[in-house]
Length: 327
Ligand SMILES: Nc1nc2c(ncn2[C@@H]2O[C@H](COP(=O)(O)OP(=O)(O)O)[C@@H](O)[C@H]2O)c(=O)[nH]1
Ligand SMILES: [Mg+2]
Image 1 (spheres, rainbow, N blue to C red):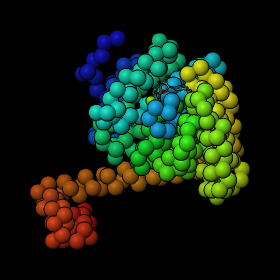
Image 2 (cartoon, protein in one colour; image 1 turned 90 degrees about the vertical axis):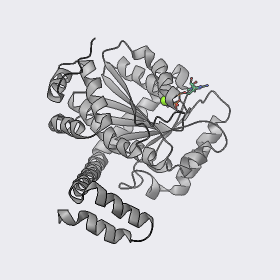
Image 3 (tube, protein in one colour; image 1 turned 180 degrees about the horizontal axis):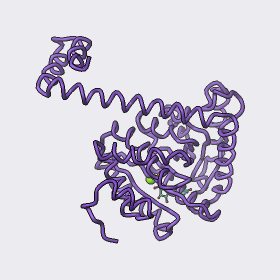
Image 4 (tube, helix red, strand yellow; image 1 turned 60 degrees about the horizontal axis):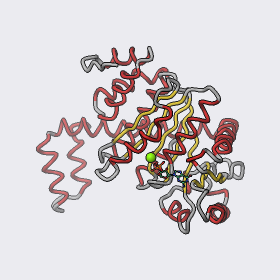
């Protein structure tokens, strides 16, 4: 397939609707970059979006997320359904190799037209990640993908926030002393709808399961991610060996169960509403800031920022002047 870089956004979108995978990849690159083009794509996609179900897979680097995602893709394809995979990689120079690794692991599915796989690098702009991820999901959703798996690294506040925004979130830990404690510290406990102890072929898997179980007990229903409907969903703990797909059928059953629970209890709708509200708020404040900066003038904006940094001016007064032209 040859790419035609000259195509306009609407042309790309139309081609993508017709199944042109190069066009989809191109649109996702534009979303990654942000700005006017990304907004344009968002406007094109929004009316047709809303039917996709999203499953997040998160955990520490090396915990086996990509291997597990690949195994889940195999499971879903065995049932005959299409699936898209977004691997969100906050690509620092140190994780650059991870994308290559993911490609290798996903190679089983490389020639399957029922599978669309894309790595999204954010080049250190974590703020961009928060906006680009829902936009990328919306695009795939609008293009007819009914199931989207999202692999995100579960370290750092922004990543965990992004990770917790799927309809069902799977948190992956490994056997070993302290791994569940680490997950807890990272804030992953609060976003887990399902826990996976992957690499269960290694020693200590049962201990880790017990650790997690105890932590869930200690936290109690009020702190489970579905606390809006207390007691009705306790995150299950599934042991897997992703490299040979052991436990993956059981994991998929847990996803199905959670999906049913979320749909029937109204949790799914509440989560989606909350996400949409948050995204809208984020878009509005970004747009307002851009607009204010434009009206205030780049030079004055920088002067005011500097004055705050040097403590010659308090941030409230600076902000007041920055947004004055808007009001
Ligand atoms: N022994 C064992 N190794 C695994 C298992 N799952 C993944 N791995 C290996 O762990 C390494 C990291 O896996 P990867 O999927 O790239 O982790 P990610 O960084 O979380 O996406 C790879 O070498 C995998 O082959 C498992 O269940 N058992
Ligand atoms: Mg990975």
